[in-house]
Length: 457
Image 1 (cartoon, rainbow, N blue to C red):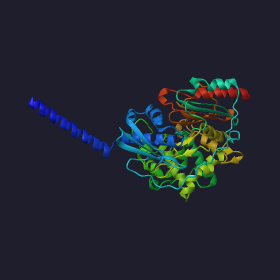
Image 2: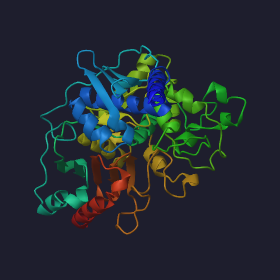
Image 3: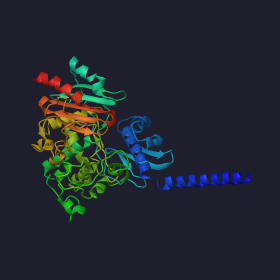
Image 4: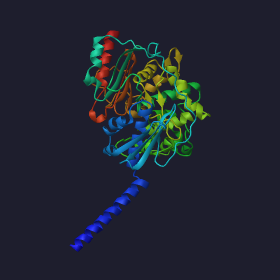
């Protein structure tokens, strides 16, 4: 019995030592997976709390934990409304991730052990015009067509996790529906739909003569090797040849960039070539963040660069809700982080449908949106030169009967805007619909195209 007792004491002591060792490891050198989990949780909660006015704990449960990696179930968040910060930790103790809100620039993820650089003030939008008819303002006179109502009220077409559907026809907002807890004035994250907005921002600088799509020698560390010949157009077409792993399932290039790096563009620009420029299609959020750094560097004054999206695009289009967020170094996360109401996402779609013109003003160069739509040669017909998809989720629109000129903005977890110029149609469908659910918005968009196609004939 004495031997057994000594053995039990020894095992108990070993367990304590192991527990202390593990706790120390998690405290002082938490694994990358834990740091990604806490940083992601803090960032999503922060943006939704302070931009979309949603309850942070509800966002943690519904947006982060329910559809996410199992480790997220063990993350807790602490929201500081006065300081406008969010802290997230594993088991309330380990691997702290932080996000801070900065007026006009939304929430910034602050990687573990880092601090956010000071940035110039970013101008905020004024209040939207509530009296003018959409798209000049927020007053809406919806269609009374029962056929439209039947489509919008069809739960199968709306899909699981729908948060907003907004339909514009010939420049008029004809119908909209919102999921429980969401309204017309709720900003929604577009995820990779932000990439198309970045392409349009670049177009505004092309029009100003501050940037060229053929420009090369884009980063100092690319000079002297083959990356020096990569152009702005190559990056927009996802055909730069740069190595980048876009898998969101674990700690990969994209999750490391978004949640572990203070300078996201620098991380992306450090990637080596993995294929030949112009001949290899590789969908990469890194290349779009690199583009954000490139266009911001076209300005001598960082404050002017930070104000540019609102000055050149959001302001003229009346996208009062739109906020593009930056990384900790002050570079816009132009791949992923634009929040805007569904109505404002449709405004942007209308802008593309009208060839980059708005209210009689040509904001993008003549023909630029046509160039954006052109197939990127390396993409096998899937992708346009300017961050536009030629098919919706699943990369296959066959069997749905969609018009040939349909193009898509697409984002993670079911964010889409479909633009169909031949039918005067723009359809935004946003929500929380992970790809594993198999939802395809093509059926919804095809039904609307058929309805308005018949009316236009």
